[in-house]
Image (cartoon, rainbow, N blue to C red; front, side, top):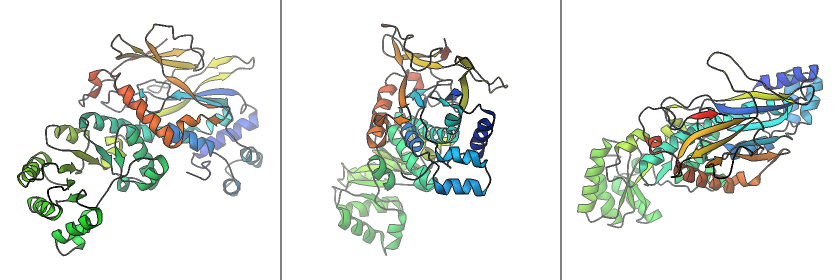
Length: 439
């Protein structure tokens, strides 16, 4: 992506900086933390996603002439603050959980250490990115776990905004989806793309058979034919007639899926199309996918549910100041104490305690030296460190960016899933699968 990201933010970020510059506190070294107080209701774990996109956005967080002119015209901040914004570049350090990592309530997912003014400017872009992408990835991971190894594609672009569609495709891919229908996501992040025809293509033609012949002529018999525009049984019969028994797949987008799929499988086998796959795409979520686990489904396509976080379009993450330097240069812990919105102050590090079977048993958050301290992790303690440096001196670690970063996050998510207790994959309502403890 290109262009300035500086106005992808809330007004009060700039007005806080305006006031802090005026009273001299803007340059106090500070530590902000992004975390979730709780998981979405009933969820047992979350998946971190959006980190690579966020690092790119921070790199593009620049106030160019157009942004400065608009801010000045609307008198958002004082002229002196406009001068400061003109030179704004994030020069601090960022630590956090790797993209694709599992997280739990209280996990210090991202810490930003910089001056107050430099860091607070990033609050909105941090939360808008991590909240949405992590929500999608967390829902997608649940869908992948109940798909039982069957391919699953993201196809929800028409159910969200054009930019969110790209982010959702990337987050779902990190969570284990195999492909996306979104071409920009394919171009930008290297995600495999898929798609053949909608009902409109069948309705365009005088007969269903003509539509099938046109598609097979264009793409060959290994294509996927949509067979439920009219009568499904008749559609399957025509699909095999046109493409032959080597037809690649049929897609079903309606009906009582367990019953319909079983009937279609029997019909395909009777017609000799024993290797023709069945793809279903009818308003699926993790619960309907789980309900099809015993049906002869070969692949799934998910739209609305995945791009809306399956009922939780935001992950509930917050961004809080947890420490700052005092006049003597010492770190001072600070925290909210508001009812039901309290936070834990202090610089933090985190690790996951694993048992002898390499199964996660506890999330440990160490309050003290911060993410650059590793003294807590003693040899043989079975603690897996969770925090890595994402930016140093304002420069992002390129390992987390672009297509390579996306693939690395996808691979890490797959590894992390092997650590979680089996209870993590139950769809019924429950508490986080491991507890979070502060040390």
